[in-house]
Image (cartoon, rainbow, N blue to C red; front, side):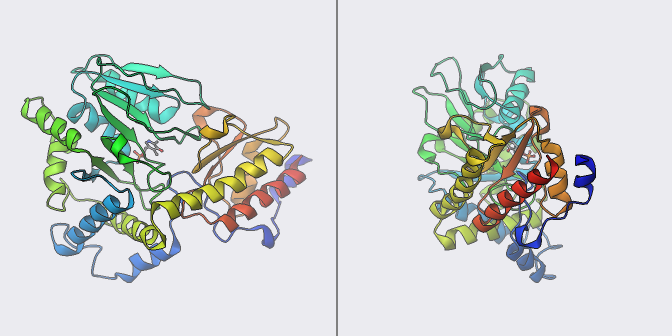
Length: 375
Ligand SMILES: *Cc1c(COP(=O)(O)O)cnc(C)c1O
C-alpha cells in the first residue's frame, strides 16, 4: 500500500522550492554564478592559467578570502589541485613534523587521522574520539606538533568551537563545510583548509589553505630538512606558486571562477556575518521543524553542537528516510540522503549560504506532505 503510494507521489507545485538542491557537497551553485561563467564566452575557459585572465582570478580568490575571513597580518592563502582529501596527504608531508593529535568524531576527521597513522615517517598520531553526534575537545600537550581539528563534521552535522589549545603545536583546521558559512577567528588557527564545493558553492577539485606565519615557517623548515616530498603534495611548492598567483599544475578554472563569484557576492552582501546569518536562518527553520514534528528529531542532541550548515534529522522507525529521500528526488528535491556510513534512518540537509530560507520553509513542508502520505 505504502509502496504504491510512493511511486507516483507528486508534490503540489506550491510546495516545491525554487531550487531543490540541498546536498552537502557538491552543494547548490547559485544560478547567477553559472550564468556569469557562461557569459565569459571565449575570454576565460580554455585560456592559459599562466596568463592574466586566470592569474587575476587566483588573485581575487586569495585577496577576497583574506578579507572575508579577516585573516591576520602575515597569513597567506595557498591553493592547489586535489581538494581537502589531497590536503590531508600534503599535511602529513609538509606540516606534521613528528606527531599529530586528531579529534575524531565522524568520517572526515577519521580520514585525516588514518592518513597520519599510515605515514611511515611519522610517529603514531594521538586519537581523541567521541561517538558520532558530539565532538571531543583537544588535549594540550607538548607531545604533538599539530592539532588536527574539524570545524564542521559533515558526516554527522556537528559543529565545534575552534580555540587554540594552550600548547605550541600548529592548529590545523578542516573547514571544508564550514568555511564561508560559520564564524571563525583565524588568530586561533594556523592552517584553515577547505574545498570549494560546499560553502563556496563552486565545484570540486581545488583545496585552499590559509596559513599563519608559523605554519609557513613549518612548511619551509620541513622542506629544508630534506624529507622526500612528491612535488604534487609539497606545500612549499604550492606556497611559491601562490605568491605568483599560480598553482603547481593546471587548476580547475570553472571552480576558481564560481568560487570567486560566490565570495564576491558574500562580500557585497555584508561579508561573513551575512553568510553566517543566512545559514543560521536556514538552520533555525529546519531544526525548529525537526523539534516540532512528531516523527522527526535532530540527531545532534546538544543544540550548541548542531551545525548551521549540515542538519542531520533522525526519523521515527515507522518513516523510512530512504523512501522520503527517493520521493523528494523524483520531485526535484535532491541529495537529502543520510551519510551512508552513519547507517541511520536520517535525512541530511545542506543549508549553505547559497540556499534560501524560503526554500527551506518549502522543503520542510514538502517533507511533512510526503510523510503524511507514505505512513
Ligand atoms: C567534503 C569534505 C571533505 C572532502 O572534500 P573533497 O573535496 O572531496 O576532498 C573533507 N572534510 C570535510 C569536513 C568535508 O566536508
